[in-house]
Length: 307
Image (cartoon, rainbow, N blue to C red; front, side, top):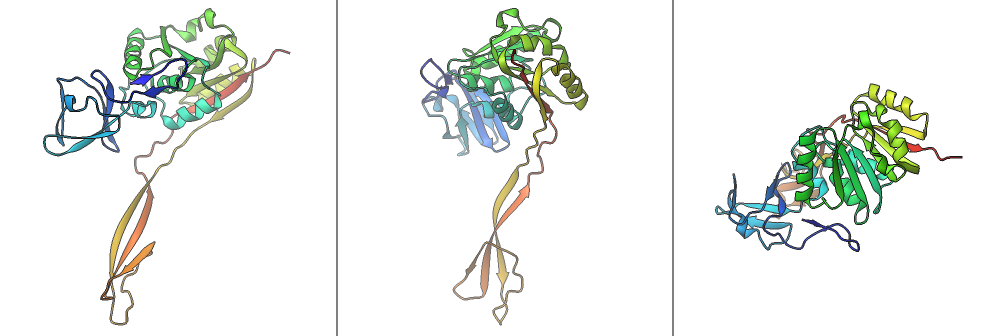
């Protein structure tokens, strides 16, 4: 679980306790969030895992099943939580999240306003960025979605850093109590241009705003609304391309003259003692087939300072 106080950074406790949330890692693309209960078990293709065996172990431990299979018990960091959370809405992934936190200049102690909360993927990362003395106020017009987000934030241990409100920011704007207090504002709305005037009132002088939109037509209308009170308006599309790296070994048979019949390019070559076989160790690199394409556009701007 995430722990925070006024003198320490956001961090995880030393060992797993009953009631903690853990990320069960089976392989790179197979993970799930599990709440630890001493009397419960987890069953998967590797066997049966008793939760009682997990209690007291540090995060990152390798645990065995009754069949000798194993999984890893990982801490629910914001990066891993983004990969396993329930999708109540479209979510932001790590490439967009890391980029916008940097461009919004969010640091420990920042006060951040967000609308809408959605599945809470970004909110969890924002909470870690502002810890230990900052705070995130996030709003969603859907009451049940907001309630589910509160439960998730409590499970991941960031509830002390996040306040969830139910409000139609497009129609009502942000609450007046935050006027002039926000360091940054993030908008993930169908019509973000309607919330731009309210966001401008909430920001401190020279505060930053970001709007996430999947369609370029939304970006155009948002930029038009920003021109009146904001400057340094920029729009980005973040495309992340990952690669798979594998090491493979290829045997090449040699003829009587010592020449290789088939000698593909390789990084290292090892000759056997008889000199008849040469084993090539080759590093293979290729783009991942399941890479994500377009997610959305990030539009940033800065509130104009009063002259």
